[in-house]
Amino acid sequence: MRNLGAVELKASLDYASIVDTLDAAYRADITVPERSHLTVPVAGGADMTMLVMPAWDASDFIGIKLVNVAPDNAKRRLPSVQATYQLFSRVTGEPVALIDGTELTARKTAASSALASRYLSCADASSLLMVGTGVLAPHLINAHATVRPINRVRVWGRNSEKAAAVAGRLEPMDASVDVVTNLDAAVLEADIISTATLATEPLIRGELLRAGQHLDLVGAFTPDMREADDDCVTRARLYIDTEEAIKKTGEICDPITRGVISEKDIVADMFAVVRGEAQGRGGRDEITLFKSAGSALLDLATAALAYERA
Picture (tube, rainbow, N blue to C red):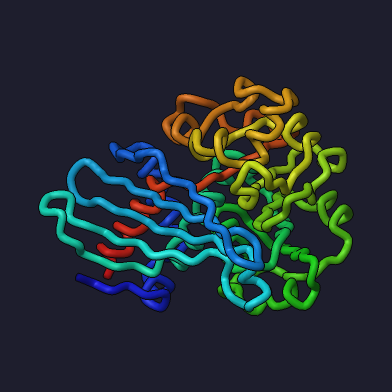
């Protein structure tokens, strides 16, 4: 059995290849049972979220990802997402690889957002606002830059020092990177707004959005979390990665529960968009919003790519 750590994944999983792999995965025959979403109480701290995410394809692999999301890890200078991924033979059931799930998740999640941007953002989008300073931030910036001609990046976070540190964690790219402290002003200027935070109150105000922008909402992975307000979801054309987003994410299930929007307001999931069954961006002046919940489908495809390249 191969043991693939973060170093091996960084060397073998470039974002452009993962984006193409995920595009193919949405067209493939992969079985994804509903994931388990468990709350784990933590004495004296914020509850931890445990995810159990299995999937298997038609011939080669079975995979399962175990994820713990620990909100208090930021205080410990540790990633909030801790995970492992195990890959098995679809034929014999033998384990074939144990993979660093934290690095795998970060690269897969960023590539998923970039894939959505390929279909939903304006083709000439050149400015990116990154909201959040955690592990995902540099991954998202680099991944978006593989599908759009990003030449200006701005980073906002509650802690300006952490925002500045994001630039140091980026892979080489041909873009200026600046820290901003005025979030509203930065929202007005960005072509693509990507958010990856643990916010429970909205950070992005829909009244500020302008024609042609694309919102990439990655955080808010539980029903009581929000990164964007109701005006965002009512002004934008709504897209999701999978139906999990309807059940699990505050950006979608919260306004549905309160009657602000209905499921009919969701234009499509990425299965329909990638397969040509639903339209992506329809016009230059549209505001598009992509909400990702994550899917074991994408984890399996990325893990299989890592194993094959190893």
